[in-house]
Image (cartoon, rainbow, N blue to C red; front, side, top):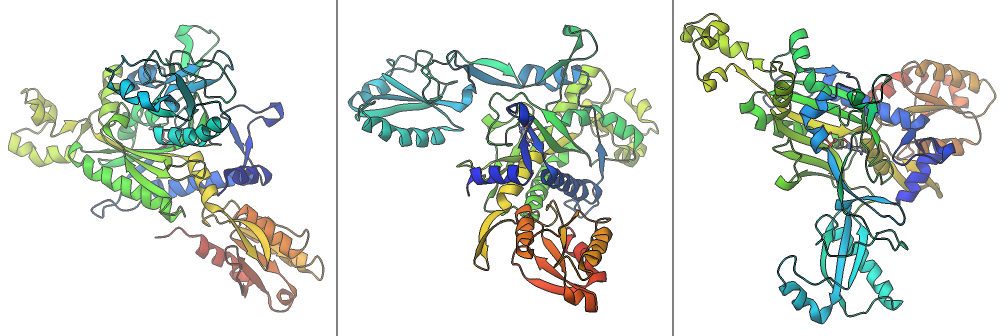
Length: 545
Ligand code: GAP
């Protein structure tokens, strides 16, 4: 699969445009066109329906309690101090004074080359004491394996052009962050001769000012995740609804990160949308809920048409875990632009980190009172009131049976990453009747347009009948009416947009009120009564059970 073709199709058909393109665009920002906006809406609606309104039953067959929130993008900056983002949401950045490019220091790899016969001399030196390697090459890569591949592809070329000696061998491949300080740090931009600066920390949160004053007291941040809005509203939700543990709070919304290197089309953007659940549960049950959500979320992607051989759950290693996480599974997808699968969603076991931090920083009680457990034990304890019992100074472990900070399991997905994965997964080229076509094989639930209605020809009353059907269907579905050009070309246009069904009004319709319904993927057609079309579409578009 060719990423360039996918990017070109996205532009040509109105899925995704560079943001503010007439002014040259803005790196890391994208606009969704008429088809893209429907695709994103379908993703968000499928998630909300399947996770919030009609979630699967819990591990013991019980109904899940899920509620939603929609929080402000800008919150009190104390939220981000307590969450650890002000101090810890950083990447290491390095820049080239010559070409002015900036890089994530952990994504630039240095390949140190030394004459093969001197390798033992270099490797025998104590760490940090080895002589400076005579040649160092630099590559932008996600990991050392990718850097090695890039190096191997280039090395032969450089030797052939006599720019490098053939007897050089790689001593080490390390990121700029890990490289010994005495190594040269060439800029990875081809043709640039600059040397990269010492890496320094860079906070990824976008800063702004609230109100008229632009001083330190007015600094605020665009949220880098939707999750914190949920944590700081935990007590509000408990106090205003009847939810009891375990329960989940869901939110879909924009998040902003001042990524140093936005790349891979929309994959790493500076503005994007998240779909996040914070699922609160009893600490004793958190492992069970962690496994449950991991499995539910993997299944959801497969049901929406992402093939399981491109989809991969990967348990993060200890070193990879975010500062708050005591376990995370990344759900990854093998995109055409990368050799290794990339993250679509993280399912994290966050323990009680966030509620504890916010409780401490705000001074507000964010514990959960387990009324059922208290009701069960109170007679045995000889008290009717929990408050009265507390006055007897019971041991903290005893109090913790009834009042505690819940643990949190967080499935956190990116709308834009799923949209990109769905586009990559859908893209196909085949031939129909000997003619090549591009067809977007979206899952019908995700397809931007659900059905197109065509009159076979623009006469004999066909347009009138077709338009009446279109008017009826558009009240229930996103449908498209097209009476321009040959019928074959109209089918092709819808195939490229990913429309799963095309309905054609022909001369037989005028006699018996039946129409043809064509299936995008195999181009088969059935005939059915015009009055049965809406019901048939509903049946075919229903979420699986
Ligand atoms: N609350 C946890 C959290 O935000 P994350 O792994 O940093 O975790 C969750 O982000 C998801 O948000 C990612 O799996 C990805 O789908 C999406 N995401 C994160 N950064 C992104 C970016 N720069 N561009 C597009 N999507 C991004």
